Length: 244
Image (cartoon, rainbow, N blue to C red; front, side, top):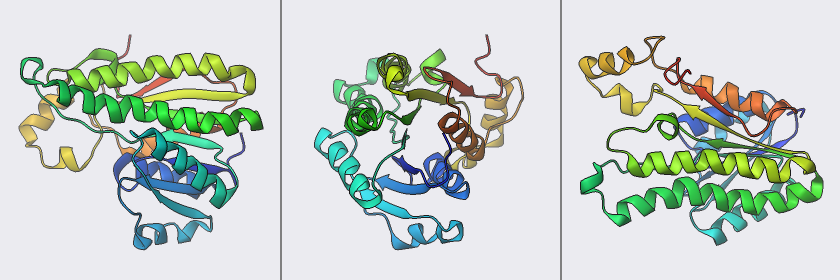
């Protein structure tokens, strides 16, 4: 898929990895639909003026089916179509299994897994009619290997990987591709506040002995959006952490 002038919707895209993905696509000529739980500021939209592309901000909660349908409808009304969907919105609520409540568990699944389901179901109707499209789901290495204190998050991301493969099989005949990215330890506001001792312990687990960066996730998302013979795959960006 040629990405110039295509319309790309990224959920959870006002900061971090989501914002980096939005900038990467815009820098390569795509129009951008930003989304988050709160209203998208004019200042944030102004960041994209340098790319000379169209940028739209749509507030909405992907964990709610009606919101997901509205987000797709508003994006389509504004730009004509959604050609690429990046399901990046996600939450964590870390607790050991014995201390995790049912509500703790279900809330994380509601956003991370059901949210992606809602958005895919909403966007697949027009994509199927157009007989083209690309969907990229943001999974995690935690969904591949598990992690102490993250039963809810691991379940949501493992489920998202399975959902990615199943939907990829269902829509491949319509020229729609569905893939996932599984980030490992990525430099972020969260890692910035950790002590050197904690960061060194984390890096010791990684064969490349370093954290990744949001830019590397963004360039992989762009790659998956443009490569027309890749579907149903989960690409780990993790410095070798989950290599087999």
